[in-house]
Image 1 (tube, rainbow, N blue to C red):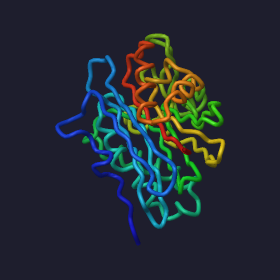
Image 2 (tube, one colour):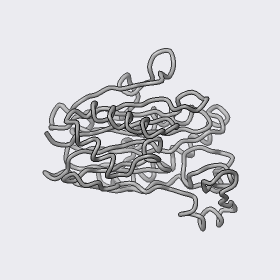
Image 3 (cartoon, helix red, strand yellow):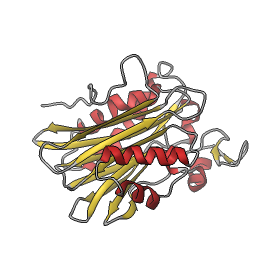
Length: 283
């Protein structure tokens, strides 16, 4: 049976290490869909920790658009692992074509287990994730853990397809697992005073208090569906969903739209790594 492998030159890091700014574009060979992406290092004194996937592939008679943002913390080993393995694990689930929702959920959890089993090779860090699979230009499957986000534009109106997994929203689950939520130090709610998201890949030291199961949404692509924006919280910390859609709508070219979103986030003094993919879904 044909197996899928995600990792290739289309989504690999720049030769010689992670660049401080990465951008690119591509398009479907069969449908009027095209994408652009831009990633830039933030002002924090650590290497770039965001990774991405953006490409179209043929697999088992389908054309699939694969798009993802992986926002790492405490190092880039976990997001790099996700870039190489997460879509591979999703598409190689036996029931992906009959039950995509279950396959995506199973693959997220299995991938997290694999990350933990590779520790200490992958270190003590972790990563959020937002993934989107566009099947034959007609149906979107979107999933996430953490606070990276996917927002769809329908006739110019923003529709959030993901759930921000914030500690205060899942306090009961965290406390049931023996953890706690604290705003100290600082003014952001954190799991055990350390991590500002309640779901993530990796983070072995906190894993007993965290979840790695994703929230999953399905959306049909029709004449009212304009484009999809995936971005890390470096963008969403300083921009609302509708503001992001309004900025992206000004540019017909998705690469220019992704660059405009990153530039706007920088102008608004975002200090985090900023990563953005814009997928235009119709001409």
